[in-house]
View 1 (cartoon, rainbow, N blue to C red):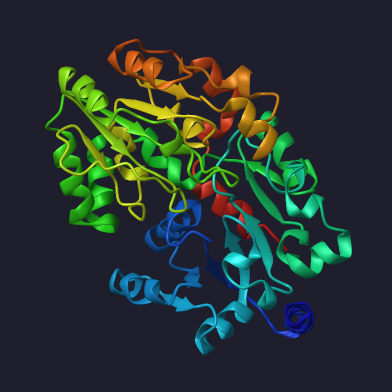
View 2 (view 1 turned 180 degrees about the vertical axis):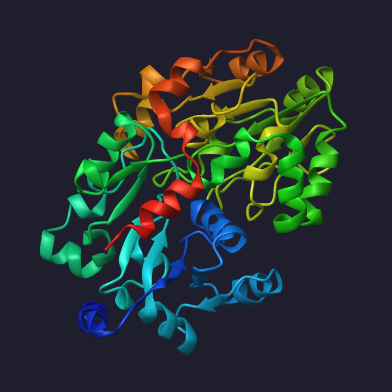
Length: 389
């Protein structure tokens, strides 16, 4: 009951925030998973190319503020005095989840740009029959999760197929989708020289050292599974033989990078292995993607981004496909049509796939998912946001 009352008080603050004068040239950026995703890359673009726009990172993580300021980024804690003031002052909220990435209760009257955290085959939000929004009544749902009931002014899309999915996901008109190459994917279309220059400026020595380690191997594979809300222990349930996996990789002179979702749990020990390394969950993977050769994934949106690059190998490790669909999230009908690769349904098939040098041509999938957006850069996204009234 107390929580419900506090939510009501918060809604009162939200409606009062409509009275606060906003400045169009102040853009507030945020992400529910920390300083990452499309919001991060769009903010960096603004800092580098759009001095007339004041880009601010507003975060609900206090420990994130000082490190970002040391990088030259204007950052504030969401619930600090300055964070609240600039959240009320910003004319535009740029998010990858919802207005709550910044502060929903201060968002009244601001334009909302929904970048989302990646195109994928999973049904999310209003499209997901398992979501709380589809299980609660409209009034109860609005009180509990009001940020998802505010329609975005712009949704970052990519193609007719993606726009159709997002119109359902966000319960919005398909005309609000703008088909532009996602900010975090720009580097996937650049030369390695350009990527390294970006890393030196924005990411730092830790990422450069990691890439140097990768270059010691003939082949680099990345395992990046999606998060299973109903089964966070998915990985340990697969009963991997770590020694057999390491031996298979050693035979190929290959390195396997394991990059797990921050909430995924497992008891596998990768320490001391010659050919397997678990990447820091908080380290941004995207700058190093072009330096990998193979992606091992399942229903993750990283597949959609990975096919932007040529001459890559993809292994789909999906031992729990039906269980995932029935108990976690349903999949869009386009999954089997657009997600292609060497399929592994168990650990033995995974070892066999890792030993294979087969490559796929993803030209058709790229055209279906990305269409003409692949030729439209971040500058066009900035123009679309500036055109909001």
